[in-house]
Image 1 (cartoon, helix red, strand yellow):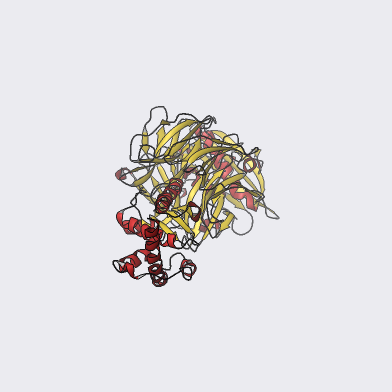
Image 2: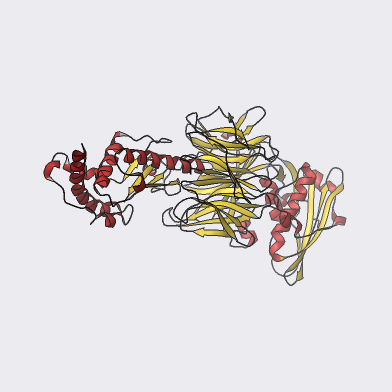
Length: 443
Length: 167
C-alpha cells in the first residue's frame, strides 16, 4: 500500500501567505499515484496598496488539491499570466495539459471592502464555464475563496463542493487532568477558529444540527458526562441530558427534531431517542452489552450503532422506532463509531485489526469494507456534506491532529495546530447562511 | 456470623488508617481522599490481624485497579485490593466511596466512555457483594478522557485502563 503513495511536503505554506497567526497550518499532502484533473490557477492580480490581505487564489488551489480530484499545476510553469478574459490564450494552457483554467483578481475599494472576480474556462472547448464578481469585507475574503472553489468543483465534476463549510473539533492544552479543553469551530480548511466552549474538564462528541446552527456535545464540567446543545451564532445553550450514569454520543435526526443518545440510566449503556420539543424519551436498544454511538440514516428511518453484544464492538442497524437489530460488520476485530455518507449508501467507521485503528468505509449494499488509512490511532470520522471527503482524528509524533482523506482514499491531508491535541472533528452540513453571504454577480 | 464480620472489619479499620497515611503522600492520587479518611477511622485495630497485617495495609494503600484491553474482568490482585477496601468501608459506615472508570486511548471515545462505566460497575458490584450498601457507592466514567500517562505504548495504556477508588 505505501509503495503507491508519494509524499509532497508543503512546508511553511498557507500560514505565511495568509499572514494570520491563526491556529492551523496545513502541512502535508499524501497523494496516490493516480492524479486528479489538471487545472491551472493563475495567481490573482491584486489591485491596491501593500500586500493583498488574503491570497484568494492560494485558498482556492489548496481547497481543490485537498479534495483529491484536482491536480493544481505549479504556477512557475505558466507561459502566460492573464487576469482578464481578453488576455487568455488557450494554446498556452493546452501545452501544460491543463484541462481547466482559473483567472481573476482582487481590487481594494477602500474601507476594508474588496471586489473579487474570477472566471473558469474549459481549455479544450475554449469556453467560459463560470464567472462571478463579489464585493465583500476583508473578513469574508476566505469565505469567497471557498465559495469560488465550490463553484469550480461543481462545474468540473458535476457535484457540489463542500469547501464553504465549517468543522467543529475539541482541543486540549496541557495534560488531560490539568489542561484546558475547548470546543472550537473553524472554516473547512481549519482557518478562522472560534472557541464555542472552554472548560477545565473534558469535552466530547460534538455533533452539528442539520441547519448548521447548533452543536450538541458532552461536557464533564459538572464532574460527569452531560449532554448540552449550544447555538454557535449567539452562544445560547441548554442542558438536555443529565440522567444518572453516562449521557453520551448525541446525534441529530435529519429533521433536527430528535436527538439519539447513549444513556445508562437504566443500568447499562443503551440507545435512546429524545424528542427535543416534548422531551419525550424513547428507548431503542435493550441488551446487557454496551450499545452506543448512534448515527441516523439520511432518511431518518434507521439508526446504526456500536455494540459488543457478540463479544467485540461491531456495527448494528435498527429501525429508529426500535425493534430487532441486525449486525452489519463481520470483518475485523473492532468496528465502531459509524456515520452515514450523505447519499445513505455507505458508512465511514473506525475499523481495527490487530489493534491498528483505522478509518474505513462500509458499502451497505454489498457489505464491502474498505480501509482507507494506514496509521494506527485513527478515530472520529465524518463525511463532508458532499460525501467526497472524510475528516478524522489521528496521531502524529505523539500529538492529536486532524486529517482529511478523499472518500476513495486517494489524497490525505493533515491539519496541524500550533499546540496541544486536536481531536473529534465533525464536518458541518452545508451552511446556507455562509453560502449566501457574499452574494456574487455573474461576470 | 455477624460477630465475625464485625471483628474483621474493626481489625482492618485500624490498619487502614496507617496504610492511607503513608500512601496518599506517595501517590498524590485522588487528592483529598487521605484527609477525609484520617479521623474517620473509629476504634483502633485489634491485635487479631497480626497475620498478614502488612499485606493488608499494602492492599489498602492501593487505590487503583487495572484491566486488560477492552476488558472489565477483575483479576486476583485487583480482587484482593477491592476486598481490603470493602472491609475497611464496612468498618467505617460514614464513608462513601466513588469509583471512577477509565480506558486507554485505543478504540473509540464514546465506546470507551461506556467501557469505563462498565469497569466501575464491575468494581461496584464486588464492593456491594462484600457488604457495602448501594447508597454509599457511586460511579463515574471518564472513558479515555483523563489518562494518567500520555504516551502511546502498552506500559502507558496499562496505567490508563483503571478504576480509581476514592473515599
